[in-house]
Image (cartoon, rainbow, N blue to C red):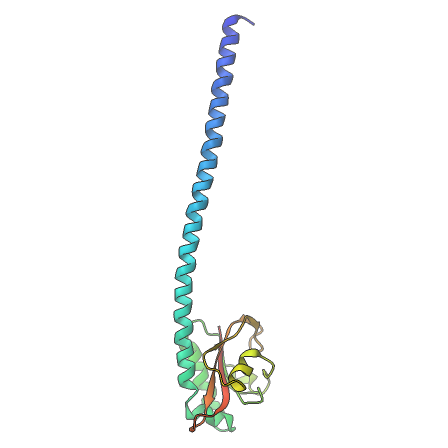
Length: 178
């Protein structure tokens, strides 16, 4: 090879090596920047979702608490007005954000009213933590761990509140699955 060809080959290799280095550095910089932006976006998204979910749970919990004082649900616990209680729960579920179903259980853990009327009497939950916390420990505003619902067969978080008699004693449990 001539001296001129050697010089151009050397210059060509330096240019190609320089361009490859620039491409590599640019790719690393873009990847790092995109990862940072994605991380910030995900953090903001999580914060927004947490705020929205917290608001939904609080609203649904408040509604459950109000329903737990209704004479109609107390009647269902006594074997009265079951059809009206089922209809009320079905309407309630339609109006609650994220709710799949609602049930009322007696203190033995057997469903006495449900938004899913065919399941009444078939669902038994005395072993569930949320049921025990409300019925035996007199807790309110109970949120369960994630479980598989016996009403729908889907993974849910259950919100539960007591159903109280006129004197304020716990006579049952109302829940909803989200």
